[in-house]
Image (cartoon, one colour):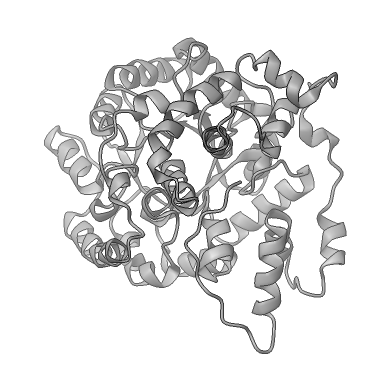
Amino acid sequence: MRVNITETILRDANQSLIATRLSYKEFEAALELLDSAGYYSLEAWGGATFDSCLRFLNEDPWERLRNIRKRVKNTKLQMLLRGQNLLGYKHYPDDVVREFVKRAIYNGIDIIRIFDALNDFRNIEVCVDEVIKQGGHAQGTIAYTISPIHNTENYIKLAKELEAMGVHSICIKDMAGIMGPKDAYELVSALKRTVNLPIVLHTHSTTGLAPMTYLKAVEAGVDCIDTAISSFSGGTSQPATESIHYALKDLGYETGLNEKTLKEINDHFKKVKDKYVESGQLNPFVLGTDTDALVYQVPGGMLSNLISQLKEQRALHKLDEVLSEVPRVREDLGYPPLVTPMSQMVGTQAALNVLQGERYKIVLKEVKAYIKGEYGKAPGTINEELIKKVLGDEKPLTIRFADTLEPVFEKTKEEIKEFAKTDEDVLSYLLFPQVAEKFLREKYSDKPKERTISFTIEAV
């Protein structure tokens, strides 16, 4: 049996361990090796890479994608997209969503993994439709979590919805590494019996369960798993590519990976890792195994960001208190899966509750928007007192929030033509207006200014 492997070093592995600070120059020399290693796909874009390129790395994310595509000629390029949120932290009108998908595929993306933080699939249907229209591979995603309202029956129902929508494959996205081997076997087995689509499993090593979980998922017939080259594996990242390959080969499975090439890839990224260890940007905390995550369920990317936020406030000593507050906030909000942007909302709100010394003394504007229904339907029941505090007598939305939004792409394109020269520039501005405007003005200036690369994580 063949088990496909997706390599995450260019996106999720470095997002989880070094807050997405891996620059193009740091991996450019390894691209041909990555292309020849035998991976099913390379996760190379999306998630927080877009924001990080503009905000911290002084890179145009679209140029980064095109440069990767030029050097990766044989392996599928994959990205992560947050449905109607795209790569930002709010919902965008349908015309922006469709244009973004078009440009992503045009610039080199083959597979788009599309998820909604609440598993409200009204918020991914436009994305899925446009990916299919553009000839891309639409990978529908189920955000996995554990709560009193989430179970196998619920996930089967979601998988059937995705299949009916026309997706080409289904990914189970376990952001916090909380899926155990038994649950993986039962869920993958149930999905293989229920839907006629390839099943992909994505998890993190945060709790130490991931390698066992992958092996049981493989036994159950999973078609593809995500791994990270060993120097950027483990901790809040994915299990090591080489170790998983070895274990699967030992058990009689095929991965298609070339061991010699994997070693060359890892030799390259060992040097990169050393630089981040020496600079202090790779915090030892995110490299360990943290079984407390089985309680607070904070995904790897958010955990590293949360540490940075607390360090900025000189409050890292309150980390345990904040992590204990996370599940309480999550329950108040109706048990949303902790995936972007919900992980940022819940994590930052929990930090505020602790740092302010009073729960919900300050309510994030994003949390207010969530309670209003602007992010979709909450999986469970939101705390009535919190609803009253935020909404008063106002009723939350019951329709898809994007249906209330007017088209803005063409209008914005005209308004910012002074500093936005391409459709891609317009999309960058629509996602991150202030950051993108500054970047684009400097990019097209006759005398570009020096930009200081910052490592501060901003609260969202």
